[in-house]
Image 1 (cartoon, rainbow, N blue to C red):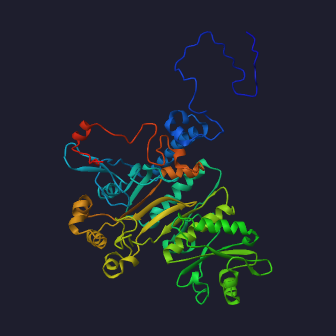
Image 2: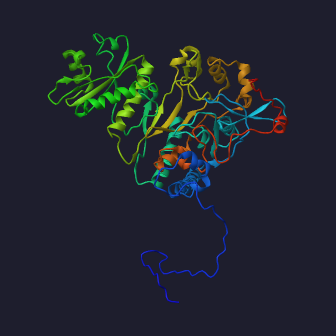
Image 3: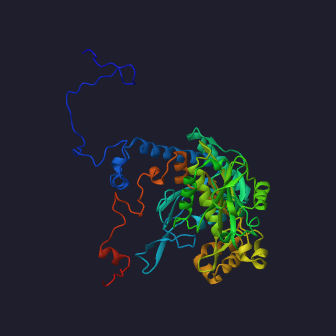
Length: 509
């Protein structure tokens, strides 16, 4: 039969199929819940309810395939570096690691519970004691946290690795090798290589107002408290004053400044106000709080803070931590609205020297990061320093404003462990009961060890340039931590509850 539809412009253009018989292998309803690959916006709850259809969407489908390739590359690279992949238990014990545990009742042990691991923290330390000097796994982690665009509710995956006889720098070298290598395999964006910038936590909070700074944003926060020490502006009196200078910012109209004030004073951000002014091309101070910018203040801002002509400046006044936080959010928003972010690039940095402790909302001392970290200065600092002044060998890897990895040099000394937990309100008995395996293992010769855990989900999210982490997970939960496809969480039968010795407390109302 003569070919009638030959098309040399497509790979299958010389193939023509003539059907002699048709068998329907899978029937389909006449009307789909939504059009697949439609350019129109589809409600996310509908997409999640019919995720098996949504996964046919070309972009989402390719994201899941790419995730598979990224996992292969990570495993290959870790194998190449001499790490051994070892799985650790999912049914574990409850541990205070910063978030609520997911508890699993035990049928065979009435009244007792397992906890799903927030991270394989204790297990990987125990592996170091077992002589596995370089461990890794693609580890599932479970934390009962509220969802965000960059955080999946309930569960996530991380490239967990640990090394014996390792320093902080040894851990950094692994990330500086593995992460850029992986990113460059799957993107044509520019990727930072070599030694990443190290930024102490205190400096990060001062310059960026956040411990996960986006280095694509050129704006820097500066402290101008002393400049306004004798100012008549009442809103600045007895406050820490942070300033953000925007080059060429004087070119913006009044509406822009009003919108920024509206942003900062929104209840979610929490600023009492957002003062601003600008200096025109001739050096005249205009707009906002111009009348409070004396010649002396103007001179100090120009000479000491690089407040150049044709710039604008924003001021945040509050107590120190709140001023830092609000200034950080204003900096991020200015970067977005003015399109200041460097394009098509991945910028990495390490945040180091985290404080070992912090005060919680009740004013009590608690661990600020990982409770199993080694304090800088060891036992001597724990015994002699103000706990809030003690630094830890803890670190985060940050990429384009996202925390992408977290880790620490681990505490391997039982005496230091007892003292560190005592400061946070735990007795030696608490430590022995809650961390008995670690405490006991520490008595039998423990090698110094350190590690980190880059987040796989965020890595894939960044590489695919996705705006929401749900776009790189095959079966994600929604903003309320519900799986709309599988209808989870759901109620269970009374028999199931009886099996695990649980009785529900129901309001009499």
